[in-house]
Image (cartoon, rainbow over all chains, first blue to last red; front, side):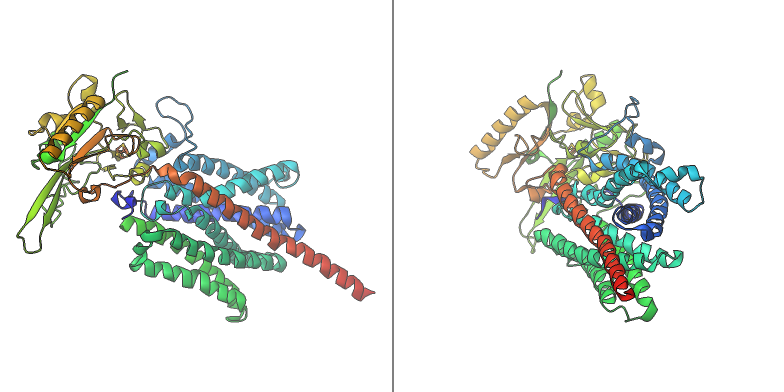
Length: 294
Length: 271
Ligand code: SF4
């Protein structure tokens, strides 16, 4: 029996699961925006703006969810400042500590990029377009992109750096969450992009990216289950059925829809995207709650 | 600097009276019920069930009976925070609420804790829980307040059989090893110490004399620190970042190339 079965559950439940989802969405959207800015061309700027528009509210909601999950929410700032001495506290070996700082830093950068995007579309003072064009904008996007990677992946490392079954029985959760966060974000941007009138060529590239991310996520998920070794028997349960559901409905089905774009007519792309978003959410539900239930 | 202090719990003389549990609750003013609810285990005389935010001592009843009830035995063990020398809870705590004291014990400062509950998931022994009264993570403090004025922790003071011994770790270890030898000499060859040396998390400042495998008492055979996953987990995430970045780069680059190709094609047609 794995030594992880002698531990107690932290009761991280729906608020934490939702945070994992919104944090992933924020990181992924920002990252796609940065990729579109750095590697795309002028026609991708609309997509990049959309990414920045999604990232800020998502990271804001995520932060609030995290604070709401504390049993003493009014002390949330103790994560950053030692309450008794007034000094900042950062423990680089504690993902919860690094994550709090990462969330704050990413939130700030996402805010700047958000303002830049507003300025570019004429909805904020033109002076703010230095946040969207030129060296400062590239610096912000570069740093923010790193922060986005961090935000998308650290939650998996946070779960791993415990002693709970499943979570700490594999080093692959960060990898899995990072890939899944980006596929969620790509799918969400596909949905929002249709509605916001993002150019069709940007949309096509986004779909191509999501296709590869789904394949990558499928591989990551298989590797994750295999890496659990004997602990994988926890999936011989209702949770395993749900996990299988995530694989089939959240990964295999959207992949099939990507392969056969005329399967559901004009609904094919949005249907695939909805499945990916819901599947990404359910993945987090299953992984968090299955370990809580052991 | 005072010496490292701790508990040596000799499970062979525990009679399951739970005096330690009661003394602990009294001294530390812990509620006797969980928000008014009296939870019964329903399958055992052990209705404390677990260590958590309002149970800092838990007398485990390991009830082993043959199916026909002919033979059987009860193992009793008063469980408590192990005050690990390498403590997983302390490692992950982001607020600095969990500290190591001058007695080499591990204490959660309730006025600092904000209830993120990372320590609950990090403890290899499942010791910590949320106390609903304070809304913070709590566990045994080894009676830090009593120790500071030279008093014995409440549980050890109350224990009628001296199953729970309190003292400087060095002398507790000597006592414990002598006790194992005596038991072995009496033919109780299964007696051994759990956590009395550095092999388990650098040493447990609350260690045990057991007469069966650790798992039988609900203890992990080889508990580990949560940080063992930090570097591998981060490296794998880094690899994930690289792959995702690559996918993004290819997806958006390809578009540029295709466009260049398309423009050239159009150019040719125009000619
Ligand atoms: S037993 Fe658990 S709560 Fe006690 S010091 Fe060790 S890790 Fe911390």
